Length: 313
Image (tube, rainbow, N blue to C red):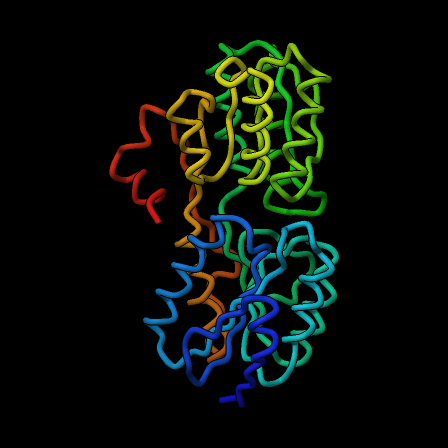
């Protein structure tokens, strides 16, 4: 196998953690270090590493999921012959395409996880069926509104394939199946909780009479919940979010959130690492796209054992 290089300085600065020593050098580049979603995904990755054995795992990502330049820099740093495979959750599907192509040209096997990546230089793509998840959110919203009213959509950052797919699935479902529900706003809110909260506050000021709200990921759901509570609108507006944290589950329990679409990041992490190990060993690719499911979680269902398995760290 290829010789391993340990970057102690990078570990200190970027909190990269070589967790296991082995013959395969595999790097995981998440979108950010500030969301619980990636903590859950790391658990699945670690399980796959333990099963595989002989894997040197490096986990390194930018601080926030809107720091595209930093993610590109990290990818380029590890695009070298001593790295066997890179798993990356692209912050921008188009801007990451060329750097991934350059990594592949050096013999590095690249697996995309969570968000789509333009081009065909990566060997696998492991993701939630995000378009279907967006439709699931829209179906739930339509039921909450009895098929009529107004809604707004808060996206995160332009170029994020996973979250755009969710928003598009949501919008398309309502246009086709709920003609009496009008989308009054569909805007990007930023890639951090703080930016999302400020954007959400502005949206609520601009559309004070909106009936329903859909936020597409953890940070936008967090920001929207904070803005709703700050405005005294918690529980008044029908709010469907995406992903889970303790804060969002608190909103669900207190009826400030009326539904959360929940993914299985552990399974995505597990499958992406399995795919990376197989690719690094030269195994043929059987399934270039691997889809995982999402479920709708409500106040009435979150305590179900199968749901708790997705929520408990």
